[in-house]
Amino acid sequence: MMIRVENVTKSYLSGHSPVNVLEGVNCEFPTGSFSFILGPSGSGKSTLLYLLGALDDPTSGEILVDRQSLGHLSSRQRDQFRREQIGFIFQNFNLIKNLDALQNTLVPFLANGCSKELRIRAEELLDRVGLRQRRHHRPSELSGGEQQRVAIARAVLKSPKVILADEPTGELDSHTGKLIFDLLRHLQEERSTTMITVTHDERYLVASDRILRLENGRMVRG
Image (cartoon, rainbow, N blue to C red; front, top):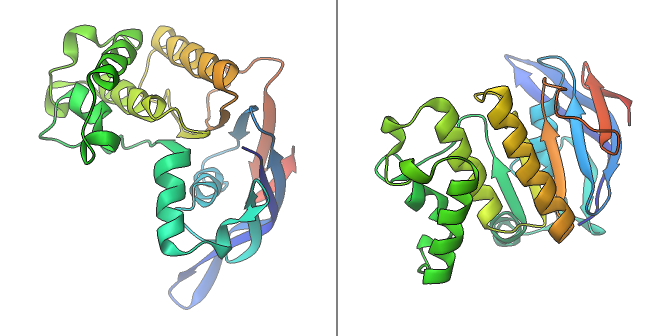
């Protein structure tokens, strides 16, 4: 899935004054690419990520996904786009407190029922992120790093065309962080998934990655 960002700005009101978070951002994310959005805190990285996932709208400019403008989608179409095409990995995990790790991994499918095959795939993913013995524990019984790994397994289980990750290794040690990125890279190579990751941590970058840098809401490279 190819994504193009064309002259995107994003502003919020602070009192009666506008605050510019993104200013004239232009970039693209080719189908099957592994991209990192880098930059200091407050540079607009997470804001851009939420715009790419149709969780928010630009103040001006356009975001095109396979030549389709997100701004032209109806509310129902946007919901369908997020549900079927996008895997989100958020900093705050968004786990449901009364469900265990396995059930939280299966959340996107619970409304329509989960097949035996799907449950097996979910268990295999939890095993791959080191949570085989923790799959029946609820979020309150898991560490922050373990909750993050559940959130990652949930995003990957959907086999989405795009994964948007906001600091996916922020709660993880370096060994587990490498394990997570190995899993994401495998998914990218196997299924041509477009990976877009916001991070402060450059330890997991490799030479073939696309690197984009934001400073003060502007794209300075990429």
